[in-house]
Image 1 (cartoon, rainbow, N blue to C red):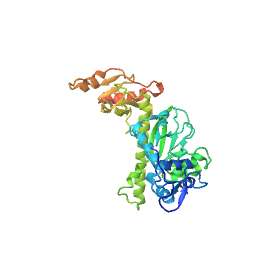
Image 2 (cartoon, one colour):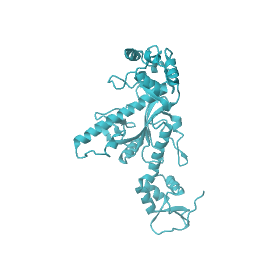
Image 3 (tube, helix red, strand yellow):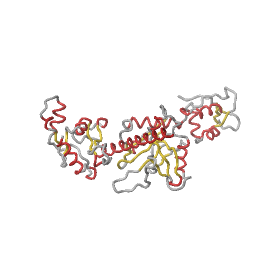
Image 4 (cartoon, rainbow, N blue to C red):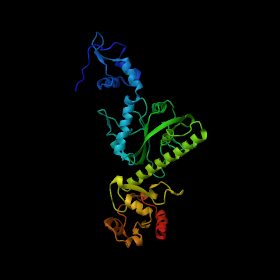
Length: 375
């Protein structure tokens, strides 16, 4: 429906042109006009006086209200919409997504990709600050163009684009840091496939090392509770605990995405294809210090077979043959036991990675199989 604008102001007060509005809100002039057309500025009139060329006029009070109402700003609406869309598309952040799918995102009638194909730092032209960052997929033995790392405080780092602090991408990240804006971090887990982690926040910058400090972010929840903010020891303990939880969750997500993708989103034991019912099972339990979150230490399994593997009801030989524990084979129960477990005894895995480098390590399987035989 076409919007109608009055020919003269309804209320008294200082009025701004859309060009002045654009300067005030830090957006392109075209965005300010879009805001008018979307009804974000309610008391607009069309100035048809001589020399005005039919310019929109916006009450300054409307613009100030917009600037002070963070949740109604274009930036905040876009970020909330992007994260909601990603949550739906990725099983609430547990699954990976292709870069082609990331180009399908639309916001308020306009298609707006959530990451750049060529650049690690992405700032859409409609925003003043970066929307997302990305870490390139790396095959074993390959180096990434920018090697992000974990600092001595346990927090993750994200490298600048190049070494010029005033490069546009770095200024876009700095703007997000200063405004405490949520970002999306896309981790490459395969060519053209990314695991999104969101929200993440930039909390500081290490100029001498050309990098930002990233909070990925469960520890913020703790500061809303009963933490004594006057106690440096208590605050430090909470930060360290929160950082450990955050890193653990990040590694779990990346491990899951890498393993599930390697197995073609199928259970290795029964070929079930429903992602929401699949886990990335560790061959060597992740509770052990020598357990590595690598694809060769993982197998995609449905939740039933994962639980059976962890409980040593089901074992897998180094030659990829499934075995079921003797006492379970002797049981009489319902169809799940019969078809889901007993009939898999001495059968080959139904799904294995096509790439040999992604297949489970024979030595790790040998160790796990030995524990199964001892149970």
